[in-house]
Length: 102
Image 1: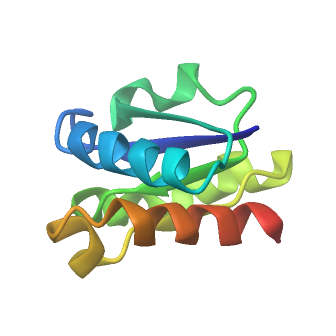
Image 2: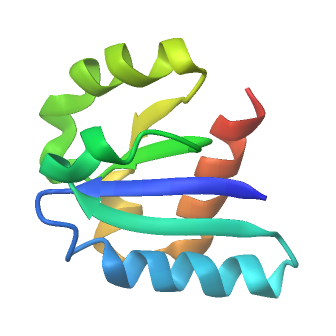
């Protein structure tokens, strides 16, 4: 099971994207655990993660979060603006899975 955390300002704007990603995973028979949180909550949710994706609105936090999580083996990156704006759950899921494989 791949554990993916989406992070945005408050965790609300990524909730719809989480739902779409879960549907895409079910359709492809991929076992995932996907959640969304606000950036302020991330520090208390860093255990047992395989990938962290940031919403474009918090991209300024990328280097700081990478410094915290990559030493633990957790890749961190920013969701593509177009995929985020269109809530393309399938593409964002593929992106997360590709990061998890590295």
